[in-house]
Length: 309
Image 1: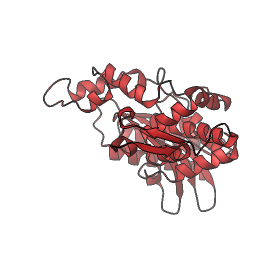
Image 2: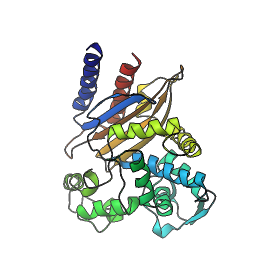
Image 3: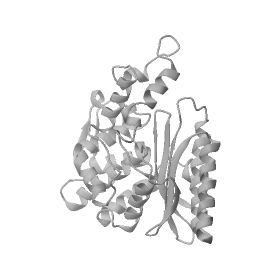
Image 4: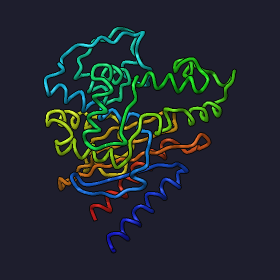
């Protein structure tokens, strides 16, 4: 009873952070190989780029099995690249890169071009078969990759494609930013019942498997752990912990409405905890994104402190 009461209090504290920020969300944390605690851990959520973890794992597993050559060179032409705020999307000339280096780009800076190239190489079915084989029945990505998803969202918002949405000048012609946000909020891609989806509990289960070498081959799991440890984003989960703690994580965000992160925390005593925090703003939410990022760290810290106590 005492343990149940403590976990109830922990869930209340984590829920209060969501309420304080005027956002919805779900979270879960667990030691590697053990049960955990969370807030709405089984609710379907939109994972955004957190899904790049299972894409990387499927690719690395195929490399480890010898069915895919990690050194295979892929040509990324300027005219066929997926839009994104960083990485290859910003380059003007043809890029040639190996499959395994594309994985590094995807995990460290969340490169969208690298992601879609890897989806084309490995196939959506292989990614979904991997997660289904782990019993993750609520975790999937849809055909078409990120580019198809972004273009579909833009079309539901009233634009020809995503570049047209990105170039739209709301100050001089409709629709307004508020109208766009509401249309995006209702889009299929931001509805986990229709778009890419997962749950906080399933994401943690996937990370537990990656850290225990049971989600795929040991070499594949090690490669994903290495890539996540080098992610440049350090202001979400990591913000809830001190410098003595190491964090390997994958962040995700979509259209200013979704901000997520999932990762594994390693303490100086070598204890490790997988944690996933997913947040969703409504179109009329004015919460500073930096506060949401800090809130993700606070929620992760609340759950893990309870587990450690």
